[in-house]
Structure formats: structure tokens, C-alpha cells
Length: 626
Image (cartoon, rainbow, N blue to C red; front, side, top):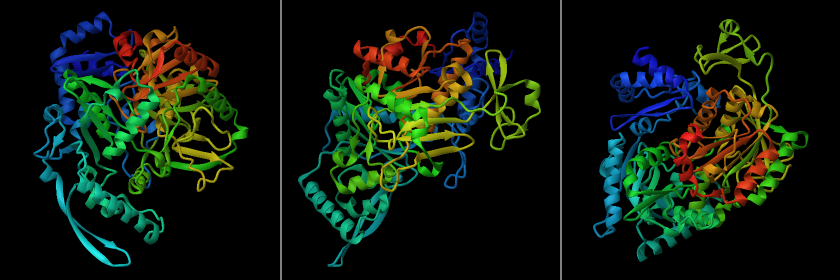
């Protein structure tokens, strides 16, 4: 084989190959890199390095290159539910390589005040700017990233008008990086006055009608000290704050419930999406996932590439209801809804699912609550983790066909004909590679029962807390038939793409795991490596740190399941899909089995919330199999 064929063949078998500092790096499922393959890689190393570098320079990425089981990222993205809709006429190409993400990002650094003296943060800030530029992020000077902006505020009844002149960060900037700036006495007084004005205006003029983020910012922005006041479009531009490292937050002995309180208060106080804590020897990163990951100052390259860039490229945003075709279902008629309630009750003893936080209790200022309310699509609270139950995959006709039957099928709009085709009744079939053999499998309809966003994950109400989510040729959402969504805050979890990707991946590549339905859970922690038993598998430890609620994270979970296909194992009892800086997803063949394993792990200290055990998984990555 020539170098191109070698590279393509390895990617089709789930091998991830990349270049760092002119070194060829390989992450492979077990058994793929044989001595013969190693010899080929050594012989053609310069040519393979050049091919990977060429793809990177051209910005091709792997969207249309088969990377796992013969499938392209574009196909995987469409399979797990990312579709065109009336608001988004162009399909969003999956990008999962942080270097390609970097090339699509533009950030700016807000200038420091002359009196700012924190040496550690100043040094970190300069190094961060350099590393971002080295990886291809465009760093635009503040004056070029901002523009002059004039707006007028009008005080009701007395008709006093005031024109405010400021600068705003242009919409095309992905992030503003600033330092934590303690408020002055003057800014505190101005903020108090602005907040009272906003409350008055909202109650008597707007009569509590919703207005845009920009509209709110115009009413309060003149008094704000934080970087958020300079942002033209808060839904497009993230605020990243550099501040002193909070030692209590990163201490592994601090209870996770206390870390939630510290983390949320830090994000709200700085009114930012990402906070980086800095000391002379360490730094941490915090976002709404509330990870407590700590990095050495010597680990700047890995942090910028694998943690910061992905978080800026794919911010945390919930799936809007416009993505779904809405309907109703009767939870009393679903045995899987009942199983989900049982699962939630059993998980109460693990303490892996802390109580959710109401935004109204965390965010004290009404103006800030209203801004967050717009950004998070009307959600009134945040919770940590999810519980779901996948129904058995639904097929119509043959679940698998021969290659000759495949060749007779018709193409499917939006898919590549070499990967997906359909029969006369519209059932779609997927050409996928398992080992050296191509298989032609029907793409089943996937249905999951999922706890609504913000619910108590360990005490679900059958009649009001459980949504039924479907994945066919589009996303479907069924609400409990007795629930009025205008009265009850009943919205899907941020992690819908992840749940569906895991379920579809299991149906295609580990069918024995899901044939009778399967419990799926996610919590913000990790098991230690020694916790795993035979027929239990861990994947994803070295993935980029993507936030929840992103369809890119769904792609990684699908790839994680697919990577197990080449191991020729038919009795997967449990799969752990790790999401760095976020937590762990589990899918198991049986409810009681999963509950027992999680309870045992927690009782023996082998599973904990927070990042305490993540280092154990990284150290044993070869044994984990990905």
C-alpha cells in the first residue's frame, strides 16, 4: 500500500493519527497496530507526516474523510440528529480536531489597566496569547475587535434622555479575554442605580415582557464594570476571565456540593462563561460544566489545545425546541419510563447527582437573570448529570442485508451514497466496516426516555419529569400528555445529542448491549481504573474537553462506541465514555447491574464526583482501549 492508502485504512479502523512537534502520534483500538503496520508507518513516516500536514493546512479536517468504521464525520453528524431547519439552512460540518477548531476562532484581549499588578496573571496572559496564535487562533487587537457604539436610554415619566457612547466587541469575535477587575466604590453605586432603573423599567414599561440581550445591555451597560458590557452579541461572544486560583475549589477534599456553590458564584460574579484560575505553579478552568481540572504551568500546550480551544469553539448552549418535531405520549403506558423512575430512585444512595440550582437563587440581579434566561432558552435552573433509558432499537424488515442487496438500494438526500442508502419503504441502511469486513446494517429508529432539564435526577415524577425523545430521519420530542409546557418548565436535557449518539452507536456496534433497552447515566466525576471488571470498557480519556449540549460531543461518544467494534466482543456488560473536564457517561445491558456497580464503586471510594480519579484513567489509557 502507498502512504495515502495506509492512512485511509487506519482511519477506517478507528485509528486516530495526528502530528505534534513534527512527531507522529497514534491512538488505536487494540489489535490494529500489528508489527507489519508498525513497519509500514516507520517506512513511510515522512510521507504520512506530509499528508496530515497538508490536510491541516488546507483546512480539510476529517469531515468528509472516513475516520471510523468507514464512516465520515459528516455522516455521523447527520445520523445523530444534526439537520438543516428553518433557522439553519446550512448543515453544520462536524469539527472534532482542536487544530481545525483553532483556525476558525478569533479572540481579543481587553487591555490591562496600568495599575494592574498581578505578576502571575500578567505572565500567564502573555503566554496564553502566544499559544493561541501558535495553534492558529486569530488574536485581533482590541481597537480592531471593537467599534464605537451609541445608544440612548430614556427614564420613564420624567422623559429624561441620555446618550451613551461606548465601544462594543464585534459579533465575529468568539471570545474576549479579560482579567478579574474588583469594582470601585463608584461602579458599585452606578450598578445599584442601573439595576433599580432596570427593575422599574421592566415592571412598569415592559410589564415583564421579554426583551433581547442587547436591549437589556443597553439599559444597564453604562454602569457595568465587567467585560460583558462591551459585547455586542452575548450569544456569540464568550467572556473568559483570568483570576487568582481558588485553592478551595481545586482542592480534591472540598465536597462537590461546595464546589458547585463556589463555581456558580464565580461565574455569576464575573459574568463570564469561562474562568481560568491562575497561580505561580498551577491553573484551573471553570465553566458551567463545573469541572475542577487543574493543570501544571508546564502543561500550557495541552491545556490550550485540548481544553480551552474546544470550549471556545463549541460554547454550552441548550438545544432549542425548534430542532424537534413536538408531540405527546402517555408515560403510564411506557415500561421504560417506569424503569427510568426506578433507576433514578436507586441512584439516590450514590450521591452522584447533586441537587440542581435555581438560577433565581444564584443570580441575584434581575437584569442578569433575564440575560441568562434568554441565553439558556428559558430554563429556570441547572442540574448536574443526567439519567435516561434507551428503548430497544426499532427496525422494520431485515436488520442486515448483503452487499448485493445494498447495491440495489437508492441514495438518500443529504447522505453520501457510498455510506447510506434506502429501500423502497424508506428504511435506511448503513455501510460500515467492522474489522476487515463491510457490513450493511439498517439504521434503526432510536427512542429514549430522559429526565427533563433541571429535574431532581434521583426522585423523578413519572407524570411530569420524563420526556420521550426520538431519532429517526429527524429529532422528535414527546412531552407527558398531562403537562402544560406553558406552566411547567419542561425542556430537554442539554445532553440530548450525547444520549442519542450513545444509543445509536450501541445499536449499530454493540447490539447485545441495547437489544432489551439500556440504562444510561452521566455524572460529573470519574471511576478509578481499578474499578473496571472484565467485559467493562472505558473510552474517550484523551478526547478534547468539549462542553455538554454540543453535537460534537455526541460525535465523540458515537466514535467511542464504534471503536469497540473491532475487538470482536459480543458480551459488553458496561461501557464508560469519558468526557474530560466534564464527567463520565455509562451505558449498561441491565438496570440492576449498572446500579450495583455504581453503588459498589461509590461505597468503596472508587467512584467520586470531581476530577480526582481522572489521572488514574489517563495513566492506564492503553488498558482502557482507546
